[in-house]
Image (tube, rainbow, N blue to C red; front, side, top):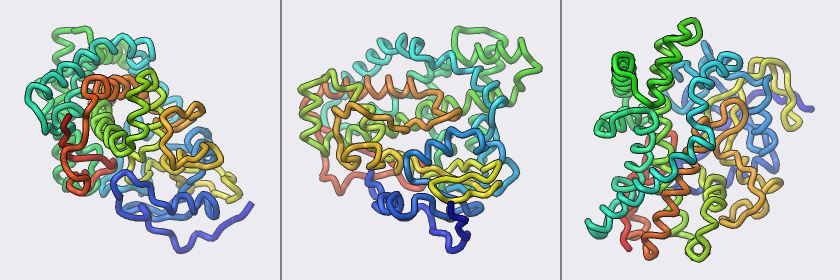
Length: 401
């Protein structure tokens, strides 16, 4: 075990995002320096773990704490600090809040939503076909599909989507919004959810927000009003932003890997396996953040991490670890052994993972089945990519068929 001097931190991210290409430096670091001292754009310096086993350890070992980030100048990609809430909690506090919503996202509950999700996807494709190509896949399919599903699950009016979709950018912005805009958008989002909470008290309905309100009112010693509002707002924002981004990302990867796309068209039963491989292959994040703090001296990959030091785990690098995945830089839609951590790991594993899986399966499956000649309608260099956000993805994706 080596007690490494904390000097000459590498700037991180290592480079500006290049479409969906993962920086080759990750592969080099996995070989020669799997735990590296880095400096993010904001906050204190930290360790970055790049190997699969080390990343899983950081995310899953109780000796690494998210709650310890509170009150620290947490290493981060954004000027603003993360505002507490469930993402800054450890068990048992984290467990208390997660239980409030976990039942809504079980595999059984999500499967009940699949027929309705298929119906929404088909209606959106019908509208695309009626309008005629070219159509922006982001605006007309990838955005409304997960928004409508999460709206119906939570009990949020779909008619308000243009408002809260704009406000939700505050959750994923690094530099796309000013600090003042982020503050304003979050206030608007929390205020909007707060009004829905009050409506549910006056007129109960059969949806997740109402269930959360009833749990709060029955157990006022267990949940605060602010916790309910922040959790519901987080579910609304996170429950659609990442899937809105991943649907066109996945479509882009398939359309730029014609051999794999042909295989999927010939074997549509491969869609669930293909979605898992795309989750592994596509690096959604521009870089990793959400540091865990060591609560005691811990060895990671032969390096001593001292108590109180922050460690960040790169999911994207872990998902390309050649000691776990055969030919990790190759897209293989039939990959049988695929223990990817695209949804995270440990207590903060994405609570909506089953919902996202189902939406991605339905969305990509519908595009494959309904539009067999789907193609990108502009030369690839003309595609526009999001910037100034913690996620990488297409801002617009004109398609034809």
